[in-house]
Image 1 (spheres, rainbow, N blue to C red):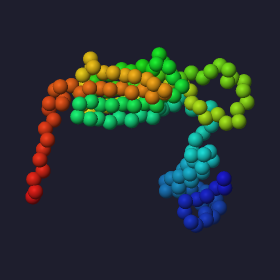
Image 2: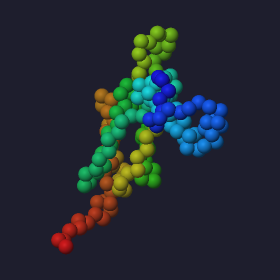
Image 3: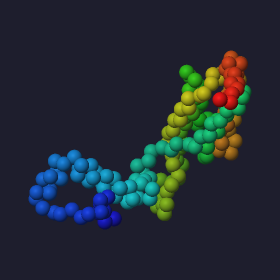
Image 4: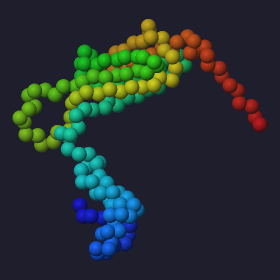
Length: 165
């Protein structure tokens, strides 16, 4: 991609300008911004080669009802034994590792977008949960975790009525 500048004017090439460019913080910032924009559009969506990406981050949905917190995580191509779920200090952590099949080595890929490797997602929970009643199921690549809120957490909520001023 051709070198494009953020500013609409053209820079003159002279030894005086080159010296000023090295010492002027504004020109230095502009050069750095130009470099970032150029490198961003070199690969689709600013991605470097997929070989540099050593893991993946599964998509997660978290929502709550009055009595429980629900967590859904997309983990396609994994087995239950490859997924680890922990809860500590009101932080839910989902981690695991998706392995690449050995049969793919030596293949000449036309396009390679599947991600393999380790991941770890931690979620700060909005309320205390009853740790003894947590339920996790995994079906067709979707991990579902039901975290019932503790009785104390549910009873502490109080509806506040808004009065007309």
